[in-house]
Length: 592
Image 1 (spheres, rainbow, N blue to C red):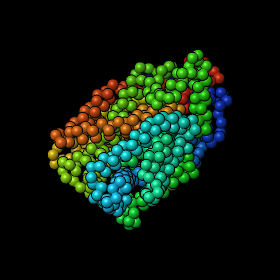
Image 2 (cartoon, rainbow, N blue to C red; image 1 turned 180 degrees about the horizontal axis):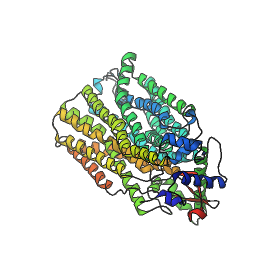
Image 3 (tube, rainbow, N blue to C red; image 1 turned 45 degrees about the vertical axis):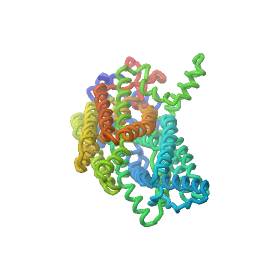
Image 4 (cartoon, helix red, strand yellow; image 1 turned 90 degrees about the horizontal axis):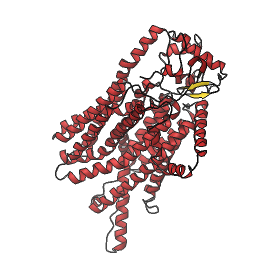
C-alpha cells in the first residue's frame, strides 16, 4: 500500500498532526513561494485561521487550500454547476424524441418530393413536420431515416472522439469553464441549424443537419461536456467524496432524461408546433453558457493552470530535442487513439499495478457506458414487440426505471459514503483534534465493492430481461438494472484518484474518447444482433448484454486498492507534490 506522506517525507514528530503539517508550511514559506493572491494557495498555518477553517470543515483535502480566504461567491463547488446541468439535461432529454420525429418528417418530405418530380401523376400529400404522417410508415422512408440518423451519430461520435481528449487536456491548462462553454456552444449551433431546417424546409435541405452534427462533434459533444463537468467537480471535491459528487451529476442527467420528454410534450401541446421544443433547448443552452461564464467560479487557480502549461511546454521541448522524431510526432498527432497513452503511464512514480488499474477501470467504465447506449433503443423496440406496449406505456416504464436510478444515485451512494468514509473521518478528527488533508489514495475497498455490486445488479437485470415473459416482471428487471447506476460515477471517481491534479482533465478526456467510440460501435452491434434474431430468439441481445457485464465483473477483480501515480517534481532544491503544488518539502529533511 502506497503511503503518500512517506513519499513526500516525514517530519520527526509526525505523530502530532499539527506540528507535522505546520512544519511543511514552514518549509514552504522558507522556499519563498507563499503568496496571498486569491488565485493561489493560502498556507495551512497551525493554530491560525487556515487551521481553524479546516477544523470547522472536518477532514479536508489538500486541494481545498487553493480556495482558503475566498468568499462563498468566489469559492468553486460542484453545487454551482448542478442546477444549470440539470436544465441542460432536461433540454437534451426533451429534444431526443422530437428530433427523431423531425428527421423522419424531413426525410419523408424529401422522398415524396423527389418521387413527385420524377412522376408528374404522383399526388404529394402534405406532410406535417413531427406530426402523425401515415404515408411515412413505409419501408423506404423508414430505411432512409434510419440511415440518415446513423450518419449523424457517426459524424458526431467520430469528431467528439477526436476532440474530447484534446478539450480535456486544454481544460487542465486553461481552466474548465471556458472549455465547458465551448462544448455547450457546439450543441447551441447545432440547434440553430435544426430550427432553421425545420422553419424553412422549402429552402433548406435536411442535409444541413449533418453540418450541425459536425459542429457539435467538433466541440466535443455531450461526452466532452460530461468529462469536463466531472473534472470541475474533481477539482473542488476531496477524492473520497468524488463518487458522490459524480453521482449527483448522473442523477441530474437521468432526471433530465425522464422529465425532458414531459416538458417537450407540454410545449408541443400548448404551442401546436414541434419547433417550440428546439427554441426551449436554445434558451437553456444560452442560459447555461452565460451562467457558466459570469456566475460559476473557476475551479483551477491561475497557479495550477500555469504549472500545467509549464509542464506541457517542457514535454513538447523534450520531444523536439530528440533525434528523428518528426515522423513519430506527426503520427502521434494524427492518431486519434494517442490520448489513451495516459492509461498506460511509464516513468518515475508508476508501476505495473497502476497501469493495470487504469486499463481495467476504463474498460469496465466503457462496457457500462457502451451497454447503456446500445441497449437504449433495443429495450424500447423489444418492449413494444414482446408486450405490445404503446408510447405511453413505454414512457411510464422509462420513468419508473430512471426514478429508481436517480434514487440510487442521490440516496444509496451518499449513504454508503457517509457510513464508511465520512463517519470514520469525523472520528479521526475528534480523536486528533485536527483535520488531516486527504490525498489521492487510488481505488479503495468501498469503491471496489460498489463497482462489483453495481455490475452484479446489471447482470441480474439484463439476465432477467432475457428470461421474463410478462410486463410487470420486465419492469422489475429494469429496476434491478437501474440500481447498477451507482457503478458509473464510482468508476469515474476511482479513475481520477489514480493521477495527479494536473492530469484529471486529460484522463477524463481519454475516457470521453472511449465513450465516444462506444457511442458509435455499441448501438450498431446490438441493434444488428436484435435485427437478426428478432424473428427467432428476440432475447438473444439481452444474453449478449449480460455476458458483456460478466466480462466487466471479471475485470473488476483485477483492480488493486490503494495504487496511484505519484509525480514528485524537484524545484529549486525542493520537492513538490502534484496533489498540492504549494506544499514543498526540503530534500535535506525528506532524504529524497
